[in-house]
Length: 309
Image (cartoon, rainbow, N blue to C red; front, side, top):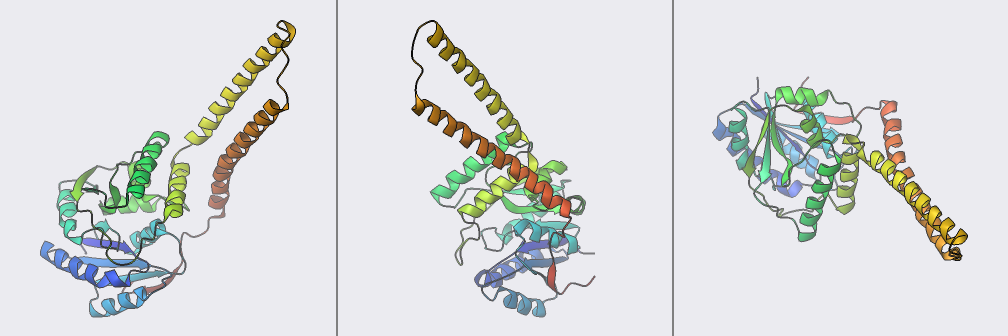
C-alpha cells in the first residue's frame, strides 16, 4: 500500500521536469513514507514525454499517463485519480511555481483529520494584469456561484483517498475540480505555501484560456445567469411600459410630439443586443446538455509507463 501519490499534469515542461523530480524525491524521502509520482501529459511540442520515460526507467516510482489528445488540465487530473493508488493524493503543477518542499505542510495538516488541505499562496507572483483579472474572476464567481473560492488558491492541494473516490463519481465533460471539491463538502482547511516564479518555459494559461475556464466554471456550477436574464427582461418590460405611458400622456394631454426614428433605432438595437446576449447564455447551457447526453469518455489513454493494473 502506497501512502502518497503526487499527480502532476504537464505539457511542454522538459526544462523543469528533472529539477522538479529531484526536489520531489528529496522531500518525499525525508517524509519517510511510501510514494509514487504520476505525471499526466498529452501532446507536447518538446521532449517532455521522452524526458519522463527516461526518468521512469531510472526509478519505478515515477509513472506516466500519456493521453491521446489535449483534454485539459482538470481531465488530466481525473485520469491520474483513476490510476493512482496512494492513500492520499497531492495535486500540483509541473512548472515549479508549486514548491515540492511545501508538501510536508499539506501532508502533516491532513493527518490532523482533514480530507482536503488547500495550499494558499503567500502572494501572487503574476503580472499586475493577471492579478487584477484573478481577483475580478474570483469575486464574480463567488457572487454568481453556489460554491466559494478563495483568492490565492491554485491546483496545489492534498486530498484523502475518500475525496479522490468522491471526485470520480462526478462524470462531467468539463469538470472544475476546485468547485467539485467545494461541492463535496468534506472537512477541509488551508495552509500557506510558497508562491514560486516560473523560470523556464511559458505559461499554458493565456487570457482566452483563463476566460474559457471562468465561463465553464460559472455555467457548470450556477444557474444564476439565467435568473439574471429573467430579472433583466422583467425590468426592461417594466421600463417599456412606463415609457409607453409617458408617450401617451405627452401625446393626448400635453400635445408633445413623439421622438422620431433615432429613439426607435436605439431602442431596437439595445433590445436586439440584449436578446442575442440572453440567447447566447441560454445556448451555452443547452450546449452543455447536448454534450452531456452523448456520454463520451472523458479521455483516452495513448500510453502508460510504469503502471500495472
